[in-house]
Length: 177
Image 1 (cartoon, rainbow, N blue to C red):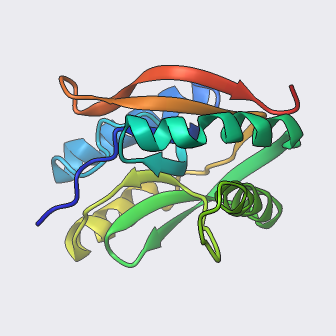
Image 2: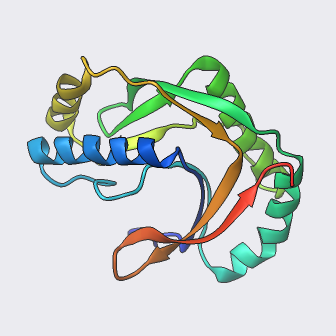
Image 3: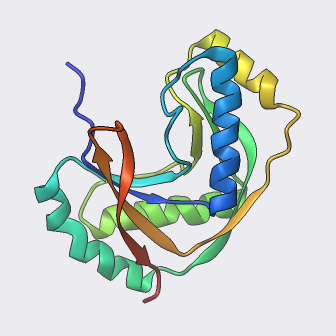
């Protein structure tokens, strides 16, 4: 039995120019290996997902409270990496990794969820096999990557049944406000 797709996703977005660049990378990869998981997804770093409206509403006020105390920070994502041969992604530098992972873990714990660690990343492709992963690395190994942006908010997205993407931005929750 497959798990249902969560209805809501809280994410961090890079800036719009970087999102466009990531979209072009995904298109290049799709042209070489065909469709893959997250091929059409907007560039993002997942923070937490909520299965349904009830679950979200139980936690939304606490998320807003958490964000009032969250400290914005410039983050850098600057290396290609993978989880085995399934997921190809852009990984943060060490300082940014620590900041993003702590942000994710701290929010989960603030909401009362048990979580020991996180591994913040920006997925390019999910659901690959060994051959497709090899192609991804070969395509991008000589492509320098250095995304820098100010991580200063979370975005709450709703899954759109028509587009089959988290294309509906419901709210931007700024840090420190």
